[in-house]
Every structure is written in structure tokens, then in C-alpha cells.
Length: 500
Image 1 (cartoon, helix red, strand yellow):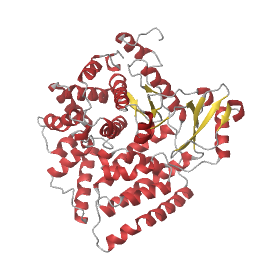
Image 2: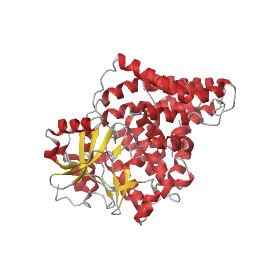
Image 3: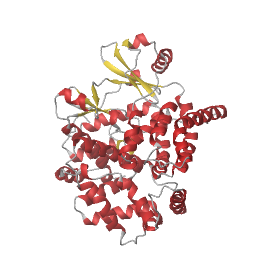
Image 4: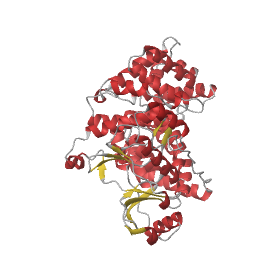
């Protein structure tokens, strides 16, 4: 592979198919244990007590028939998530980075849930590291700082120096986290359902939909070997793209294991730390642009991508590059969804026939539900999808909402059946719930279990993340602003072009 030139498209295409270093790495999610009954009772009591404390004021105002401001539940729910920690904080990160789905006010409220979590006792960290690398800490590291530099919901990160002098970051899963996650997932849905029922807010039903995809992805994050393989893979892919400002930390497999990941230490600040970025003295716009381009390169050509680039996972580095962290969640598109994504870009670039391919994919994916729910015929569907998608892809970030791509079908279906989405009364909540159940029944009749498959779920989530960064740094540009880049990208070989 070392003799393949980056501009040799045919050689790259062949290498993607034949070389294991360029094909997507295998992923082995950790099987979660069955929640223990005593853990469920204990955690359920804790959830009820914490939620009751934070929602007491809201409940009191409702009993007294005092009008509540929009999304009044957001702050008490965020505080409930923070107090519960672990899985709840992890889900809060998704809410915080998706203003297109949940609105700026709700996403802003949940912003504080990013990169938070309690400190793991040092003896437990030490034991976890030594067990995974198979040697005493002093044999592997010349220095290992006890205080973490990062405390996320399911892991902590410590700074260290290896015995050969390399500065590294050591990510350590919280001991016993798999039992905590299994218990939380069993109780998460009922909590959201209760809040949704009591408030009648449609945003909470969207959270319930996203919860299904969240359950699928978290198992992958609980084995750090998946993340190490993904980092190695994407470092390799970046060698075939002219994106010198983007970097991925280099993992150290000899100092890693299922619960520990040792990697190159990158020095920088999160992408939304505007003051910190300003102190570096360089323009962040080209860096954000290259991250978005990198996403499209890997998605369009290889059908896989980083599936969780929230603000805490993008670092503006002091040396003028941008680092992409936390590769625990990787999206992998099946061939049909891969073709759909390419067709969507081709359509936005002016290929009118591609809109029919986009509509055909959605019809095949969702069956009669999408047409029945929207009240459209086969002939009308491509035009409707074009009217929704084309402005989102071609107008500046500052003028559109990528979240509309997710919420508009539900909105249009409700309007088609005269369901008032703004009615906050009990009657309004009942009508919205009945509409959601009707669409769900249509999906089940088509043999489907839900709105999102995994690849589409992660793809949609990542586009929503880019909406936030686009509004911050590229507000006057559209996703496909550089048409030449996308035309050239779509013309290059992809894994779809290779014989199977």
C-alpha cells in the first residue's frame, strides 16, 4: 500500500476493496449484562426521587393552572440527567448538539451536560489500566497524572508520558459502567414517556425516537478496541485526501485493551471555545471547512464516517490544525443508503433524475407510511422531497435548519390530518399521540421496527452537528458551496464501484 499515490484513483479504489487497512474495521459491541432486579429497584427509586425534586416547581405551577413557557421542562430534565449521570449525561450530549431537532433553547440548556462526570477513584483507575495492559503502571509510563484532564459520562482521560518519552492521553472506562448502562437503558424510556405525557411537548417524543438509535450505538463504545481500530483506519483514509489541517490521534495498541485506550495527546481547545480559539491567532474557518470535507470524503467514497463529532470531540490545536477525537461511534452505510446519500448530493448539484432515486429509496425504506403520512402520490413525492431538501443543501448555514429534514415529514403528516402541533392542552397531546401511533402502526405493517436504521440515524445526527458548527463559522456558506469539490468527489471511485 505504501506505493499507492493519493491521486491514483483506480489504485485507491482497488486498495479500498482488497487492503484490510482501508476497508472499514470490524466492530464488536460489548454485550450488556441483564439488569439485576435489585439494581433496577435501586436506580428506579433514585430516578423518581431526583426527578420529583427537580420537577416539583413545574408540577406545582401546572396544578395551579399557571401557563408555562415553551420547553419549561428542559431545565429540570437537564438537571435530572446531570444528577443521574452515566447514560443520562451521554444522551444529554446528543440533545445539546442537535438544535435542529430540539431547538436552540433546549439544545442550549443541555449544553452543560457535555464532558461532565464524577472523578473515578485513583486506585480503580490504576487497577483498570494495569489489568488491561498486563503490566505495572510504572513499567509502561514514566509519568501518569492522577487528576484526569477529561471526565466524560462513561470514561475518564488522564495525561501520561510513556517510558520512551511520548506524551499520551489514556482513556479509561469507568469500572462497572456496563452494569450501569444496562440498568439505565431499561428505565430511560419510561422517564421520558412520563415527562412527555405530563407536558404534551412534541420535542420529548422526538427524544424517544432518538433513544432507539442511542441504544444501538452505546454497546460499541463500551469496548475501546473498536475505537482504536477506527482511529487507525481513519488515519489511513486521510492519507488519500488533501486535507492537511485535519488530524486523528495515533492509538498505541500495546498500551490499550477493552477498557483502556492509550493515544497521542493533542493540545487544543474545543471548537466552541471561541475565546480560546481567538487566543491562538488563526482563522478557524478553513479548519471547520476541512472537517466537513473529510466527513463527505469518507461517507461518499467509503460509506463510513465518524458518527459523533459533537463540540467536545473537535479540538482546535495550537499548531493550526484541527483534531478529531472520540472514535467510539462510527457510522457504516449499507449499499442502499450509501447510494441514497450520493443521489441526494447529485440531486442538489442539479441532476433532476436523482430526485426520483431519492424518493424511491425513501419509499423502499418506509413503505406506504411515508406517502400515507404525507398524503402524497407516487408522482408528487419526488417534488415534495426536492422542495424540502434542496434549500437545506444549497442555502447558507445561517438561513436553514438541517433538522427540518428530520422533523418536516412528521409535521407535514400532522398538518395533512389537521393535527395542531402547537396545542398544549390534554386534548392536543392526545391527538398528537394518536397521530404518532397511526404512523407507527403503518411502519409496523411494512415490517419495520422504527423510523431510523443505524446508518441513517448516525448520518442524520452528524449533519445536525455540522449545522451548529456551520452557523458558528460558515454562516454565509451552504453545505455544497464548493460545487467543484462535490462534483469531483462524486466522480471518483467508491466502494460501490467495486465488484463484489
